[in-house]
Amino acid sequence: MKNFAVIGNPISHSLSPEMHNAAILDLGIDAHYTRKRLSIEQFDTEFPLFLEKIEGCNVTVPFKERVIPFLDELDDFARKCGAVNTIVRRNSKWVGYNTDGLGYLLGLTEKRALHKNDHVLLIGAGGASKGIYLALKEKVGCQVTVANRTIQKAAEMIRDFENDRAISLDMAEEELGSFTIVIQTTSIGLPKTIDETPISLHHLKPGTICSDIIYNPAKTLFLKEAEKRQAIIQNGLPMFIHQGALAFRLWTGQKPSTDVMKKAVLASL
Ligand code: ATR
Image 1 (cartoon, rainbow, N blue to C red):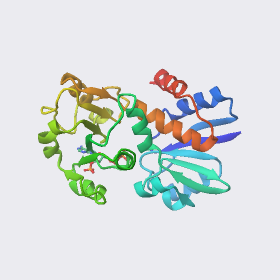
Image 2: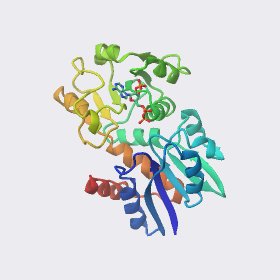
Image 3: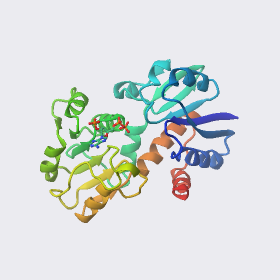
């Protein structure tokens, strides 16, 4: 039997095991997927030992960058992101991938396809935002403005793309009416900050697509405020399912049913 897992800290909230085990069962594969909490302090000792026991894993906060020195190869997209969310054992070599960005785009197409003339506001400049930014640039080629509390991190992200801008959260509030899509990637809205939004949405135009990468809670305050202003809203569930489905294909070579995966996640929420 092949063993797969998701590593992170904390990790008990992750629904990746439910999602992947449903797909494993559906396809009749001899495998099992678990969650594994690794120590932040002892990561460098624990992670290599853990790798000996598995065929592949997902990586979540706060280890998406810390796993990189332990891998033999990085695929091009993961290297450019500087973050890995999927690790695969290939002929006794460990290869790192990042399926977050493409997973996000596939999820968004459930609302509508993005075009070159879309203008995206990306709020946040952390690990998740980087993957989405790169997917937007490489797969869509639209203009992206990145707003972040620490503006320097946003400036760093856009440095290879001269038409893009890095702005403050205050500026994002003022300019909100000029974007066709607004993507919320910060941790604001998670249980500890459930009654907060990263920016106020007073200037949001009706019909703007507003998406939050958080899926639990299903509707963050950001999405509730957007809905009040007649925006088209989407939470992080489609991204979660699609990044998982892409990872599953990398490990098994088989295409899982996203419907089966989604049902398993919804049943566990
Ligand atoms: P992830 O890998 O999940 O994206 P991360 O790399 O820690 O997590 O990034 C978290 C993002 O949320 C960052 O953009 C962070 O802003 P800073 O770069 O200024 O730290 C943003 N964030 C977290 N808490 C915030 C807060 N209270 N107000 C505004 N932005 C916040």
